[in-house]
Amino acid sequence: MAWIVTALFAGFICVMISVYNRALTEAGAMRSLLLMCLLNDSTYASQKNGLLGFIANSEAKDAHDLSVKVLTAMSELALKMVQQDATFHLGVSGFLWKTREEIKNKSASTNR
Image (cartoon, rainbow, N blue to C red; front, side):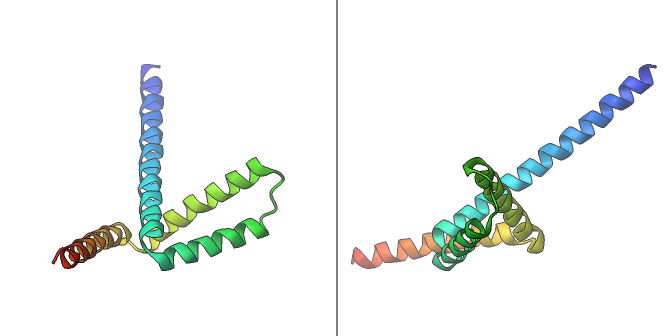
């Protein structure tokens, strides 16, 4: 009987680790997508147009239903971007660094 309880507990722990790992992946993907939208004008415009189209075509019953559908779609989009391009996070890091260097260069050229 004790081995059944132990096996169930071990199974529960495995499921919880899997859920936690997915949550971390999703949160990282959402942060990367947010950074790209904030720093890249073309990404921002593309995502905004897609979001407006999604909202217009959504068959939501009320504001809460629409909000849930939009947030779910955003999470799925961010995860899809990460799954399709394994270097997406690195690309965002590189873009952040490039933006930093551009800001430094503009600052240095105006200080001359």
